[in-house]
Amino acid sequence: MSTLLIIDDDVAICRTLLVHFRSLSHQVITAHNINDGLVAAAGNAIDLILLDNQMPIKSGIESLADFREVVPDIPIIMITAYHDMETTIVAMQNGADDYIHKPVDINELDQAVERALLRSDEESTNLKFQEEDHNKRRNSRFSMAGHSSAMRQIYKTIGLIANKPVTVLISGESGTGKELVARAIHEASSRRNGPYVAVNCAALVETLLESDLFGHEKGAFTGAVNKHSGKFAMAQDGSLFLDEVGELSPSIQAKLLRVLQEKEYIPVGSTKLIQSNARIIAATNDNLEEKVKLGLFREDLYYRLQVVNITIPPLRERKEDLMDLIRTLLGRINREMHNSVCRLSMDVIDAFNNYRWPGNVRELENILTKAVALSPSDTITLDLIPEYISARENNPIESGLPIHTSLDEMEKYHVARVLNATHWHKGESCKILGVSRPRLRRIIKQHQLTNPEGNELDENDNDDITESELVEQ
Ligand SMILES: Nc1ncnc2c1ncn2[C@@H]1O[C@H](COP(=O)(O)OP(=O)(O)OP(=O)(O)O)[C@@H](O)[C@H]1O
Ligand SMILES: [Mg+2]
Image 1 (cartoon, rainbow, N blue to C red):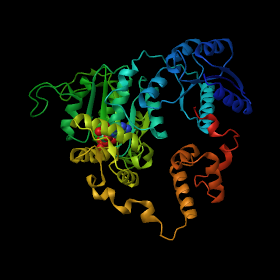
Image 2: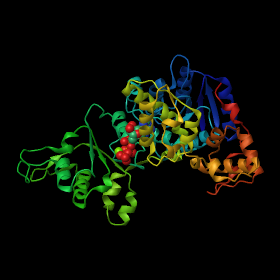
Image 3: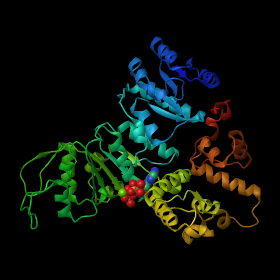
Image 4: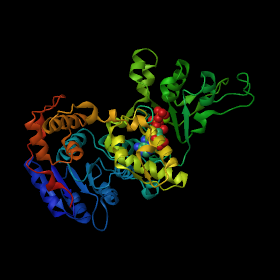
């Protein structure tokens, strides 16, 4: 049994959460403004705080620092209607331990509470408050779009690790946004005023890459007319992004391992040890683990690189991000082209939803750029996108199900497909299908759908609070 402090100016939500957490045998204290919340936090033995962001006078995020002063080690879960990258990162950096979005999914909240209580049992977390002008960063050109649970998790991770001296390995298919994540980590870190230096490890032959990274002495090799200091030196006090790190040759792998372990290296043709404090962020679209197994990548280096691992799923696995991405990318493209194409016809949206996007966000960006350039109006119409995207065979309904399929069978097929795509996350599935949770439950029962991943379907279902009770008014 733990004691939870719920701070929300919405009395109805407070009550609903109070009833829910009492039914789980927790003690609950509620407060309806930040001041009362701070007093309650200071005066009681609290184990966890649920803090709503939107409050009169001072927001939850703005008051995180005050809570951190009063209760430095108590986990705080923020509840907010904002779920863009910047707000999540700032919340995590200001000391929130987790971040839940409105409308609240009760399963998600329960899991977050359990996780936070467990974590605070194991260690006492005390993330440092960072003075931050986050409005400035909100408009940053490195902003990422996407509110899928995978992307939200990535924003949280960025917020948590940006200021920790750990190496990060970002993996994902080509065009998923690895470089953007690297940039976001740099921008969210205290090194943001230092240099951000990017190197593509696959672009240069081994000898040139070695001197490009570590520098060389004058005359170190033919063509080395002048002394060159290299990217590690350039990235001093900043971040060094090693793109396509899986392509490094064995000898450079060895040298990189040394920098990671000893924080020092020797330029080509020199005998002098140089100190490096560059923060390394690496990216790969290879399966590095596989490369390690095949003996193509050093195992010790792999473990050094992936102290924190961020995997960006391909776009086809997070189609719910599509519209958000389109909006952001169109804004960017229109600005660059001094254009104002801001609509998509319905058939284009359908075609985009049905397409697999093998080139991920970069492919989407290229298609939109071409369409904006060619569009005679403010709308992207079907004739402006390539035929392989608008082709009918991409449409799973037209291609996958025979004409004599009944509506009932269609429902079963489609609901099963959505549930599997969300790993049976019922909140997400309800959102995609546009149905309430009780209706989804009925459909699952009616068609006897089962979770192939084996989690008991009903384990999260015995809550007697309906989602609508928790939806923000
Ligand atoms: N979540 C996102 N929001 C906005 N733009 C994005 C997002 N993800 C990717 N992009 C854009 O898509 C393009 C490709 O992204 P990026 O270069 O980061 O991909 P990558 O994973 O590094 O690809 P590669 O493996 O081919 O190097 C960039 O123009 C980037 O700005
Ligand atoms: Mg890249």
